[in-house]
Amino acid sequence: MVVRLDSLVEVSMTDVAVVALGINDVPRFPDSRPQRRVELSKHKTNVQEILSYLKPRCRVIYTSQYPVQYSQLGFDPDTVAQYRKAGVAIANTLDVDVVDLFAMID
Image (cartoon, helix red, strand yellow):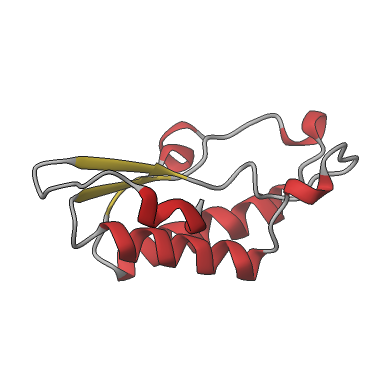
């Protein structure tokens, strides 16, 4: 996604970008597609880059991932929490609006 940011159409401050990242990046076991997962440090960098790119161009809303049945899908709840908290913290630092779906539903 980060490499495609420059190819986005021209946006204005009247536009809204909803950024929903997280659960697809999180490792799980067993995992039929481990190549699609992103280490936490890289996930943080990606979130930072995407939000920083969009923020001066339009209104940005960051949404956390929503709760899922972790054990049935192979997720470690603590690992999911690390990814969620990282994204929310970065959005807060950048003064991006946050809708923390996880906190609202869990």
